[in-house]
Amino acid sequence: MTNANDQRPAGNRLPPGQILTRKWPILHYGNVPIIDPARWRFRVFGAVETPFELDWAEFGALEHREVIADIHCVTRWSRLDNRFRGVPVQSILTRARPTRAARFVLVHGAPDFTTNLPLGDLDRPENLLATHHDGVPLTPEHGGPVRLTVPHLYFWKSAKWVTGFEVLEEDVPGFWEENGYHERGDPWAEERHGSDDYLRMRRGPRR
Image 1 (spheres, one colour):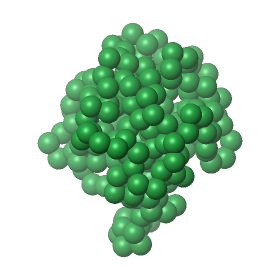
Image 2: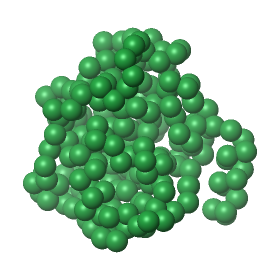
Image 3: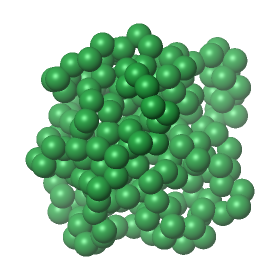
Image 4: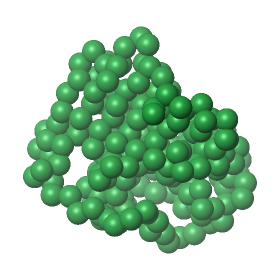
């Protein structure tokens, strides 16, 4: 079992502006997709040497690991000592073999949500494609059957209903970043909201 909190300097576990809760608030945009695992697919593509796709059975056969992690939502709540279980992200990236030019990843989630991450923020030992929380399968409201967990960033970067990693050479904002959230989302730096310059720079080439 990995303790993600060991990756952070010792001291206060509550980032600035956050309030502790024992509950796990449910926050999302739009309707909750109900995903049939028999039809679920996870795809890794883009700037990788070995693109691949997994079905539910193939995903379930991979190595799984437990991680203890604090989570911090941009809406200012934090929940400590969450026990997640899932497939280590690093094992997925090792199999895909990002190219030397790869620098970013656009995480895809059902039905059409995305969020962007620097490759260095995704490629960390505590990050999971999680299927369980505190010993119980993730509910659809909490991102099941599979959600990404990236504990060191605000929790919107831990995308729900994950369906793929698109590895990129250049940064592309996701759904949340195009709608005002910060491009990185470090809770210790209170990176809650994005800059207008970033949005103008990144929206231009996509049109």
